[in-house]
Image 1: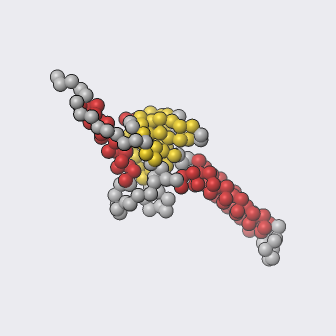
Image 2: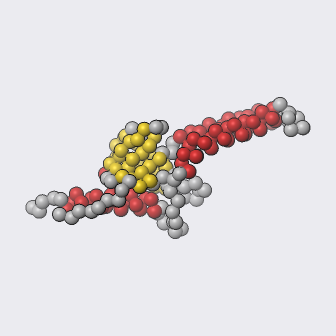
Length: 167
């Protein structure tokens, strides 16, 4: 019987995930909100027209909501044995690697994200996104974190396949 030693728990998501999920939306909302309040109260000298003030408030509110919603969809992810451990809003959910149906990554964005689609729904939903840890990636190639997950799945499939009795 073939045995494979699996690596210990390894963080797959970037430390920047928490910043973009928790901190950045608050900094944006408070900082730009303070600037909008200054424009509204005419603290910067020249008065602005009411239409400009309303447009500024609408843009500030819209981007604040967008950054908050986008940030909340990001998860912290670890590879642990035969599972992905996904941290979502204070709780950790174990997802067997065999339940991972497909993975894709964003391309051409300053902050890359990986989307994992599951065979069946879980406590984190049918899919989830995370910012992968920083690693060298050749142009037009798959992110190393996706390759690491695929390799672990192959290792596990090899282990379970070798445990079968010959017919």
